[in-house]
Length: 315
Image (tube, rainbow, N blue to C red):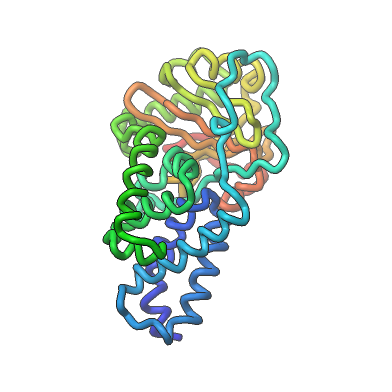
């Protein structure tokens, strides 16, 4: 159906990003987007145009996501499972069986729907704390910028109910989401220097040099481990004790497109895929480190599972 393709095709990336924010998983978001587009294609002949195609697709995708959340539950990061570890000497603890993790999403820096504050990993993780319909109301109103009446129609409720849900959702997100003032611009020379120093120190297993580019309040999370660490001393203590013991063991390559619009690096151990690192950097240094110990993510980001030849550091 050519007319449907021309109307809906350019919106696919936006709908995918919406589904990702709702579900917290690139794979789940892709499945939901495909289902939403299939439903839209089947129903396009009956589409009466009382709302825009964009609003209609958001409505369909939102309801697909709400059903998925009802069936599968929410995704988490280690900080959602308990307090930060007080002792960095023990090895990281495994997460409870069946834990479903918030995962990274490849984002082209030029992609308008991938603006950093709206797709940043910490923001997506914070969204998962909201009840599903509050989450949908917030995303449809504040991210997709739909009028409150259209949001109410999409969710099968009233404008009053939508505005009430928005108040509660905005209050909770304001507490949980990252402060934009603490985030650096990706092309900022200072940030680029911090990232280079971080990669060099990590590859050299130089914990002293690494400490110099970490903020005092830095956090470290390592899905699928439940353990996580808060504060420079704890993060450096854990990495120095358990990870950075053999200089040269890890080779780190920049990843493009990045995860969630943030600095992203593929980490190889002895030449084999080991982990994907997603960083937040800003004034004062690196403030958040998410290390996804999931080599299966490498193909999603176009990275081979065996180390190829080439430069190790970002330009």
